[in-house]
Image 1: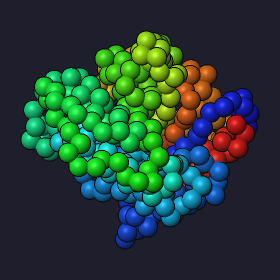
Image 2 (image 1 turned 180 degrees about the vertical axis):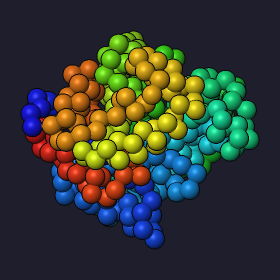
Image 3 (image 1 turned 60 degrees about the horizontal axis):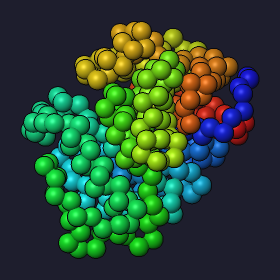
Length: 314
């Protein structure tokens, strides 16, 4: 295997429910990742477990590895409450927690929450305007068109370091907000060409105009270290879910494909490492390998070991 050494971090997503207790399974996966040398483990917000709470538990029980959430949808949530969750997790793990938020998908917002998909970019701007200061331990006084937030009671959690704030953004307007008001972005299904030609230019220009540091670009990359053809098929079936959403169809088109399986890195260690290097060369500051939860435990373990090896080489 060969990959150019660069100052890049490598993470993995946790595989998903396994066994009789989700928390115990997540802790076991994170512990294995930490022992392999992986820099970070990430989990998504769903409708069953609470991702921020789970991240706090995992980070407390597994020292030496960062924990991240990608991403908490902002609809049906208030920034004051998201900030209290995030700060509590941050205090628990001693500064190793990373938070990403997202607009979410219109069908889920409308069907699951019963909310109107109303002025999403304006809502994202107000949400970030409130959440950013709170995560820095500052009080807020905000009366906007869509969100009202005031620090009527204490809002800082003692012991909580400043929490990095990312946005799961890929469209131009959301990327500009991420550069202006957050620390970076967490794109998914944005291949190397999309990172280099669309994501990096938009978010970097916005961060520079706002006087902020160069943004983090945490690329979530579907990957599985295996030569099993059934694994590739399982990855493809799982990724097909994302074609239901316009935002992902748009970014897939920018990648030059309609099938998200075309972006999956599936193969032996050399094959996946070569694909990962393309994301690094495109400008990713962190690469998170996202093995689909339908894959067998051996494949997920092998994928975690590769992420750890890439981290050690860096």
